[in-house]
Image 1 (tube, rainbow, N blue to C red):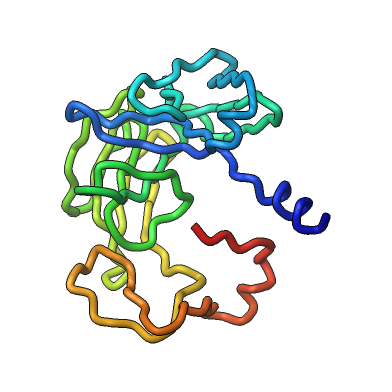
Image 2: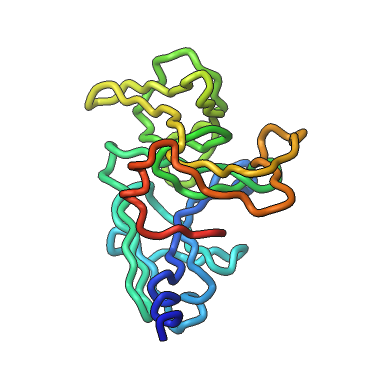
Length: 212
């Protein structure tokens, strides 16, 4: 009974994802398989229904990069993307050639798709790639690096906005091999790695650890 309660408590939730198709980035909400198969699903953004993507079974395309995304099925989920013209979205890129990603709160290191309002202007000297996107915002491909404190600085109608890499609070430690690919995670051998906090007090904010 306890395992069943724990399983329900940790049920997967919808996520905001992106992928590149035809030289354009698509933003969408992706439903976990369990929720998708549970019955009729209604997905809306700012109270308007979203269209299910024909190429990805569990995804509904976003029409905007702001506001609230709602998923109604056996459960109801809401994802708040922030206010119009004031928010930005960060997608950690992965997969083959880094052509897909998932929404994150803060950058650490690696390849990211940075989605900002169209009137935000980059003011510092950094290397970015301008990308096309389906929601009317501006998108940049940028590689963040914690080692050199890399950041993006924008001029906005509300003032200066900085998006800066931040060292993770936790890391994996264990017996590892030198990995030839600098863009991949550490390769551990012999035994599974352990999770270590940079500061012991960081554990005070941890409620659940999800492996996946």
